[in-house]
Image (cartoon, rainbow, N blue to C red):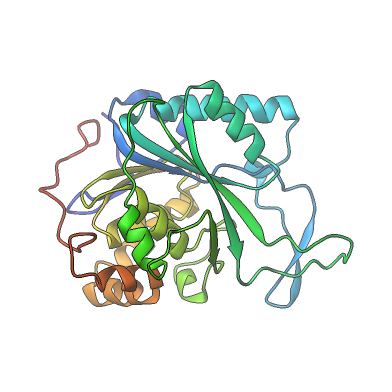
Length: 294
């Protein structure tokens, strides 16, 4: 049995604190979807601008640059472990920049995944390029892949079309970076905005589904999952970020706070406007415990 660092009373939010490479092999459970925001390997002394101030972009030791071979080995290892945790019809989403995304794509293909899309997240509020020697960095990439070449995956086409003004959703998403209201419990250096995770979760899962995040950070994946009636297991090795995850989840125990957050996420607001079963906020089916947690 594995000791949970934190879990909600309903067991829809579960958090482990430790190394994902050590914890993933310790249980056998299949998830409907995985979202991973792995190291981008870009913390090499660069600078950027935040709130009008020049800041160092170093995220931590875990994000330090590696050789191309080391990056490939790292990605192949964790993606292989995650593959074992996906249902046959399951899908995985992996975010990155040019620093890591090509290595990720090669690892996915070598492990037998079928790449479905490469989403370009075009940030509507990127920081300026202070060197004035390059185009401003304003995008990240998110690869969406399914586990099996021949087993169909779930995609809520109708919902994605609806929230896109009744036009087919493209693979370019114009969404803002993290908003100030998402930092109420502190800010993780690579924290993703809830608007991005909400769209991913609504597109590729159904209410009650299980979602895994092997690099949980401050658990944006878990917060979005619970706001949308999905269930979550996150793995985070840094105690300070596990504590941040706990604080963020306990915020939305208050139904009014959870409702406020949903209203701030445009895709959720649009989804609630539908008059069909495309999306609904019903409670998940009766929660059952992850059998390997205590």
